[in-house]
Amino acid sequence: MLKIMIIVGARPQFIKSAPIIREMLACPDIDLKVVHSGQHYAEEMSDIFFQQLNIPQPIENLGVGSGTHAIQTAAMLEGLEKTFLKYMPDLVIVVGDTNTTLAGALATSKLQIPLAHVEAGLRSYDMSMPEEINRKLTDHCSTLLFSPTLNAAINLVNEGIPSERIFVTGDTMVDACYQHLFEAKDSTILARLKLETKDYLLITLHRQENVDKKGTLKGIIEALIELKDLKIVFPIHPRTYLRLREFGILKLLREAENIIVEKPLEYLEFLYLMHKAKLVVTDSGGIQKEAYILGVPCLTLRYNTEWIETLNSGINTLVGTEKKNIIQNVKYTLENPAIEKKMKNLPKLFGDGKAAKRIIKIILEKYNNEELTIERSNYLKEGYPVYATYFVEKGSQLDGVFLSDVEKKLPKIKTLLLCDSSGNPIYPSDDVKVINGYVIHTHGPKDEQQNLLKLIKKKI
Ligand code: UD1
Image (cartoon, rainbow, N blue to C red):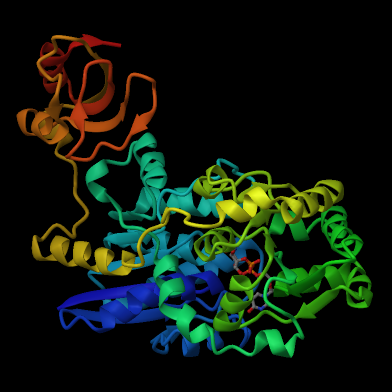
């Protein structure tokens, strides 16, 4: 029996984990235990999600609560190590990019327990975000990396993570969205808030960089108040609520006639409210993606995003946090019929709703093949590996050959990344062909690199 432990702690993790948890509970070969770090503890931020998403009660809740990043992460590390030593799981799963994710990853890898990261490879390339630090470190501790998109997988190979540990599975948030949208239709939230379908804007705000600075937070709130002809629903995250009160802005918000202030909403209500909104404005990563899945235009109150696919689709726009820009972009989006058109028939960029099934299939295969292990490298036996980059010339013996065949010929060589003749990165999966004009970036023992050079002809 495969003993798996999944670590959750913050609101988006309950949602992203739920499809995996339910799938694993239905699998007779898996003994699953859920552990809660206690990062989110309020009823409306935690318990309600366990109930609505049918997640079993955690076997342990570490109850770490709030604190500085170091205090919170350290408390989780200590608690998780004890839990792991008590249950000795064969695999630990962490999800997303919160402090709970990082603590789970560090505690697991220090005990040499194999680790799987769900939502691996996302990058905003902004190290001022705590989440960027968390996801980078977690990815580099992981044995199995489940990426929601090809772009995320390319980020990982670019950082030198071997492709055989990376799997593009789609996003489990899509699974959750598809699985719960039908139930969400029974929600009475629109009637309760006296709203009609597509007659309101939905906003969420919680990022540290947006809400912890008075000037930034005030500017965003003033923009909402100035959009006085627009009904706006604002379910307030606890972090944001505290700051609004501390900075004396809460009163301003409560007095604005166009703004409906709400507590954090439960998942089904929020999903429905998002589905029926005219526009979503957010600084959340997950909500940008959910808006895309539900076909609702989105404005993102940030200067970067890890979900670049939503930007390329033209239905999500980075508007930053300046008051003037927010107002202009809201007006432009609502008055632009081209955006409405784009919302129809959007491609399924984040998967087909079966990511959890794929993840579990891969985990079971690895376990049954006895590959769920942390490998000690054979480098010392084989000679220290070196990096080398080649240009595949016309007439090269590898021109037109499948990458899997190259690796069969030279098994000690790992292809880190391929680029086509225009320099675009290609994920090095087995079914990719090496073609003249491509650049191939590799890692492997020196003598094997010499053999590769003979076949490929030109080193860069
Ligand atoms: C965390 C994650 C963020 C994720 C978000 C989703 C990190 C670094 N950040 O941010 O990636 O998008 O969760 O919500 O892990 N609080 C309560 N009740 C609660 C939870 C929090 O009142 O149930 C308050 C506390 O005062 C706390 C503050 O909210 O100080 C912030 O909580 P914290 O867990 O530090 O980070 P989030 O802002 O929620």
